[in-house]
Image 1 (cartoon, rainbow, N blue to C red):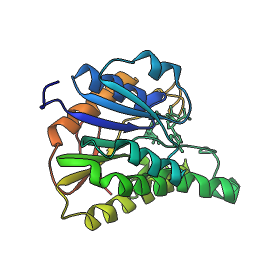
Image 2 (image 1 turned 90 degrees about the vertical axis):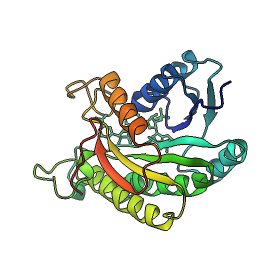
Image 3 (image 1 turned 180 degrees about the horizontal axis):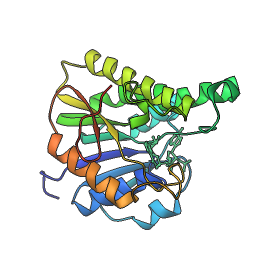
Image 4 (image 1 turned 45 degrees about the vertical axis):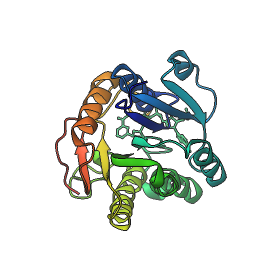
Length: 228
Ligand SMILES: NC(=O)c1ccc[n+]([C@@H]2O[C@H](COP(=O)([O-])OP(=O)(O)OC[C@H]3O[C@@H](n4cnc5c(N)ncnc54)[C@H](OP(=O)(O)O)[C@@H]3O)[C@@H](O)[C@H]2O)c1
């Protein structure tokens, strides 16, 4: 195996955008470790020598630490936390039970940062730590309302990722917050603007262009900078 082969860890890859990213990076010649919560038949279908499948729930701290233990001998050019939830996203905030609202916040805004904290030492010099954000996480661009609790959780992810980047500024990797577009997945629904392939091809292009760039950027899948 050539030493120049890039290595990615894609977290939350059982379906949707995570699965699409795994397929895209494998096609581009990367080595990929992909995580699922439970056995994903779609992920299993991709199995090649370049793909390793691991199991972990990002809300389970012990599982994340155990995963780190299994992978800590590796360096990743990309660690991408894709996993996210949109439970009761269509209900206004006051109609979402407190425990449901809190769980969306934990999964979307807290667990990705905790995961990144555990895996920061596995990011290769000149690598990228990416989080799956959303344009809905932009406070400034919120002129339509809706998806209130989900929106707030992604805004919190953006804020937490900025703090994470400041805390780790001396480390030799950059941080990306990516908006994948409105994509036809289980979460995005059938009426969404673009298909998975368009989104993940765009995100992979953005990631490959920016590998090694320090600091934090909030970009969409075309590489356009979004307002915080
Ligand atoms: N689709 C869009 O239009 C859109 C737009 C903006 C942002 N996003 C973001 O993009 C990401 C992926 O979304 P998607 O559209 O691909 O959604 P999806 O089809 O619903 O897939 C969600 C993925 O996250 C995983 N996941 C959820 N909770 C997890 C946890 N606690 N630990 C580990 N994995 C977990 C799921 O695993 P299981 O299969 O085990 O449930 C699944 O692989 C999310 O962060 C979402 O907020 C999507």
